[in-house]
Length: 459
Image 1 (cartoon, rainbow, N blue to C red):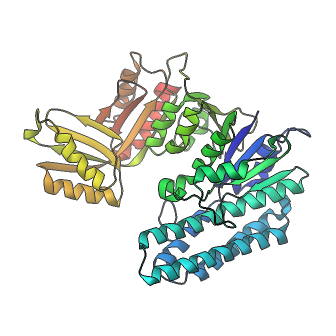
Image 2 (image 1 turned 30 degrees about the vertical axis):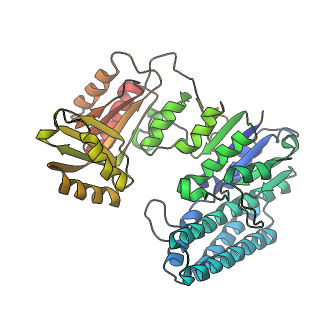
Image 3 (image 1 turned 135 degrees about the horizontal axis):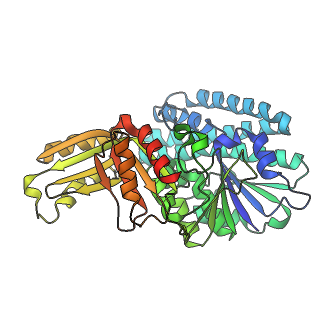
């Protein structure tokens, strides 16, 4: 069976476990191959290069944007990458070769960025496009570092491995992302080699322009489709579980086991990405199943996401949600029976590039729940200036999802569990497809709501 397997940054930073749990495992001689690994940068590396994904703490990229001494900061990042290399020497990394590779790659990046700076200073180009090009160059460094190191370590263990560099640093071909992936994987005898590919892929459309920080999963997806993999595997530092073990306790949740792409989309919509939705779609259309596995529980088969799975038994598979939501309600006595009122509202959402996660309406009110952000606050202020009565309330969203919950009783049990825990349902939504019950609750009730729904619906 030919597999394409994605390894995330947190797992990569514990490469000893990756090596002996995932790559080698209990395999015997000759059983190591027919596998392609698409790897993320080690934990925090992309944060240093760009900005912190959660806190927005600036990295090298911000220095480039501000025309500051980005080269000095990039040199500091390079030293951090060399320190990571030193920590991998005892796993089998050939240190001098690894340091030479990443030092050369950083120097190449500095040369490219310097050229971009000169072009930018000319004033004859679109600054936005130059900035995005710099972001692409910086992002690629982390994945090149981790993929080269992994290939070196695997080869030093006596297993034949090939470094598949999709970053395009050493060529000037104007290839799309798909064309580059096809080119780099063509002619490889997968039966006799493990491939380790960079999570970043250079393409004329710019992988970060389209997918931003979800780019490594897009490379993973496109590679799986290109080589016609039998299965796509994502290795994470946790199981895809019935609820967050940090909230409900490890003993009160279980791996989901089986679910479908529709549920994966629901999870992505609330920020709990089993896989980036734009990465999932090509796999779904190609009939390739996704398996989510726990790096640190290698003997467990994980959770299989397939196109047509429906649980034979009515059950809630996952309870999840987010505290970082904002409920915007627009009330207008003149809304009743006015065709297209929603369309007026959505022009403002489009202006700020904001989509809603939940929508609920009555005769003269529309409530939409969105992610809380700087843009959401600006949206709220403009809505207040243009509509009769607008309120914005910080809330939490809690969802109960399953492939087979379109049966009587689930909504009753969920509402009853919240009631018994003195949690009011501020707003509610469910589509006719009935795969996701969405409850809006006060933020201070979020953890209690997750625990209550997990206990009532999953245990």
